[in-house]
Image (cartoon, rainbow, N blue to C red; front, side, top):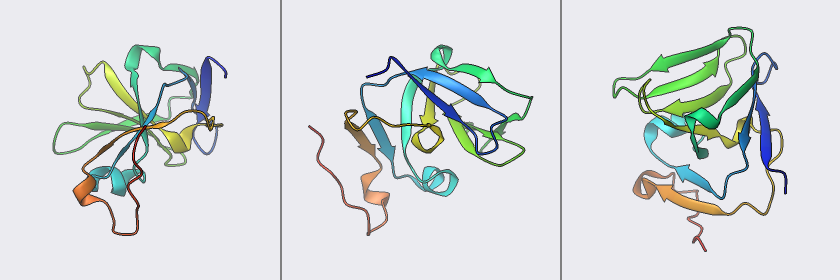
Length: 124
């Protein structure tokens, strides 16, 4: 398995790479479901390397202080951080170019808020 994963926004203005995670988490809270469909990868923010950006990375701050990073050109959801000074970020799985099948599901958050059509998969 590669030691890094590549990702990008839909239009390609923003590209990035992250260390290959040990697992993927899923958040079922209302904000995550509305914003991106609920599949973040927790990562140290200092490990996110923007490999191309033409200044289209924009941060939206919600009422709780959490920020969501997106491409202002195409609207792709890319990142989440609790506040600007947060060292822990989430990178959305849908923004990754390739997701290795060997990476297991980790935690699921706010399971009680998940849509009824979603199945909870037990973690290993």
